[in-house]
Length: 277
Ligand code: ATR
Image (tube, rainbow, N blue to C red; front, side, top):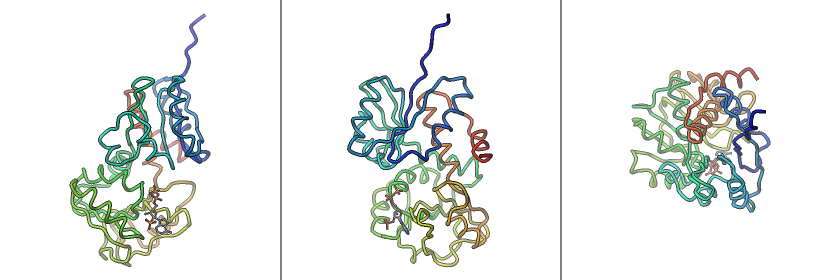
């Protein structure tokens, strides 16, 4: 009888995580390589997060993803941080070096940039980019966006102070401006990225009237079934395109998979499968 091979075990830690598509996405990745993996959801409250991570890896876990609200805490649990995770002060991928040596990385930013460049065909170099929001989601993507050398990058937030704090923190990587929504430069931007939680409440930040033009691509980092409030808002203002964050989700997952297993899965077939659903 052939020896039984146990699957490599992965987990997504979050709270809540019930809605997550990650097990589905990683199962499709594994199928591309005939890898045997078992990817589960780990719903743990903040007070139990640290213990849950340690227990998982001591018990032989191969790798973990981390989502809200644990990303900053994960940066404290691991032994080492990649440069980009250190910048983001947040970890979404834990790589097992050994049972007691865990490396924390952050693939959110590279996921967004890869989706924009490869899947959406959006040029970032030389572009005028407006980011709405100044929370953890923005902190995670600023460095990879600046690496593409946009002509202008503005962070606009409901609370301008938080945008200005990010501006100061990342100013060594490129020129950033920061303001409240009403002070945004009222000319069409090339790309407007919504990273606020406003969508969750069905709201859209109140921007000056001409920030979106016929050549503007609007990108909502939120995703889900149907159009988001931000997508509807962008379409009503005649944006060239209004996309949402499925591509970012799949691309960040592919990058995690590569970090764990050394091969990068093709993402197009997975995006197509999600679209069919
Ligand atoms: P995340 O990690 O998802 O970025 P966060 O750190 O709580 O979460 O940040 C949420 C972001 O959404 C912030 O930029 C927040 O603005 P404030 O800094 O002013 O709180 C923004 N946000 C939440 N609800 C909003 C709303 N109704 N309109 C506009 N911005 C909103």
